[in-house]
Amino acid sequence: MSRSLKAHVMLVLMTLVWGATFVVIKNALGDVSPLFFNAVRMSLAALVLAAVFHRELPRITLGAVSSGVLVGVFLCVGNELQTAGLKYTTPSKSAFLTGVSVVLVPLFLAFFWKRGINRWSAAGVGMAFVGLYLLTVPASTGAGLNLESMNRGDLYTLGAAVVFAFHIIFIGHVTRKHRWQQITVIQVAVTATLMILTVPLAEKVQVVWSPRVIWGIGITGFLSLALAFSVQAWAQQFTPPTHAALIFSLEPVFAWITSFLFLGERLGGRAGIGALCILSGVLISEEKGSAESMAVCPDHAGVPATDARGAEFGIEAEEA
Image (cartoon, rainbow, N blue to C red):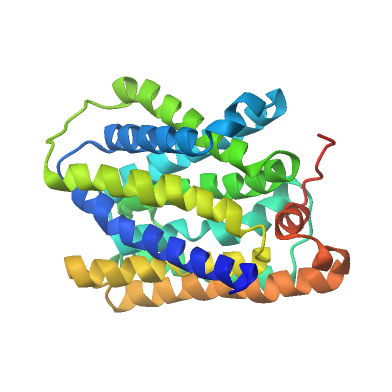
């Protein structure tokens, strides 16, 4: 099996893990407060990654630390909002809403970094926002976008999608400049530290050490955090960024399947159409939009995946 094929297979398996763990986290939150749960599982992931990549620790540079802190802050805020939102919304809705971060990337690049947005990316963004409306706003609210009618968890998750979009942009930048192992360890360690510090300030800790909490911490700490971040960083060296983004767009599909099988969740007609619009918007934006961008900027076609991703994000790398 070639490294490229192996990388594609590993990314699909990782995406399956991410999608399935929405249900695991939802179940665990019945017995534990969300921020405390995040702090424990992220700390576990940080310890695992530090043990796995211990040879990288003495070689960490000051530049890698500053870059890791930056992406770690985004990772922390995004995870806190997503997990808090999952306490009030359903696993499949949370996954579909989080997936909007993929189509927000070209929008933010156009607005903040003055990068042009092509017609397919614009169409994908439009479809995703139509899907957001159908998925989150009840039909009885009338024609306007009445945010007060939206579930509180949906709003938290939308905030997470915004933060994750910036995380995607900056992680593409910093991994061009520094070793991916170092960035992986630092960002998770920073995230865990910030979560530990904010727990006593942001919530009253409530926890029942039930099997679903313990299993939730173990499964997500090892699989969806430590292992998944490592697999992603390795695999995207051999996978074009467009292919990786298309694979990641399967996450809400996997989340809905596992939620349907284990929780009996059904989206309903209106929400189902909204979810389909979001997924279609992601696919259009990444498949057609990225293909058109490559045609306009053919120099990126021969660049390794990590470099192409950084170039696609439009943030020029500085000399290390």
